[in-house]
Length: 350
Ligand code: AMP
Image (cartoon, rainbow, N blue to C red):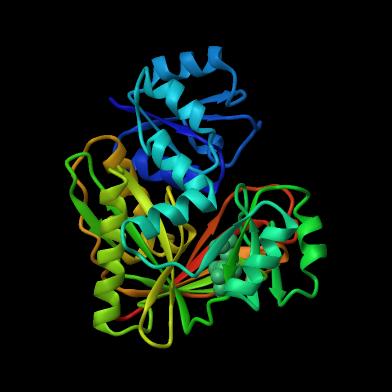
């Protein structure tokens, strides 16, 4: 019997625990929140701080391997646990992905393009960055941004000072605006033996910075598809990564691909794999971090995944009545604007 420890209690942890259960693996959730979505489908729960070493040490002693379900787990927590038990993704991989500057430096450093970017610590830095890579750009906090939070769109110097003040002194990065044709992502997995398996790229639609839909396959040609998979493989290999990672990319009108960001975890744009493939991203991640062989990422169907955000939850009665819909609800109490409450997947014949 294997017990997998998961840091984090959100919907990604919930779907990981459900996939683990299918493989006969028990999950122990460690997170600071009572009654989390993941805890309610898992065998064991520790409700404690990521900074409290006593419960962390006890957690490490009670599981066979540890993984994470969100990228902002403190790297020091991962490091503390890694001295006691196998932890994937590593503290180093988390550290790289947690800061947009180290992330982009890493990506560019292995020869993969991003939108042009500059580090912004002062208003002078921002003024200079807009001159160099503007006029259109997006100012983003270096750390703790998600779902479009901590971001401001700029067009020239107008509004730049206000946007800088909004960052409240948080170190930031200015990215040149990428006039992409479409957004795609690759869900890649790497096993402990270095084997890499990638799912086909999905095409993603966001609104207000939040993912709305992922459609498989993405409308890209075979050359772009292969280039996207090669990039994802290069990234996981260079990181010496174990587990599933999401690599978000902008497909440009000239065929170029720019990496937007890497998410060292199972990814919202990979939820379609639950119904679309024999081995989902969640099972793939559990296999990888438990040292099991990776599964086949081939899909048997095309699919459209749609997030249920905030009031979208009111559509549940209609969705329950719709034939062919796979409905996933995360068991979150209150629907707030922007909160991911669940998702649906509709399969299409290939
Ligand atoms: P992020 O939090 O960096 O994933 O950004 C959220 C969304 O904002 C992305 O999925 C894009 O739709 C958009 N976005 C982010 N960065 C850029 C960029 N440099 N150029 C154009 N659109 C962007």
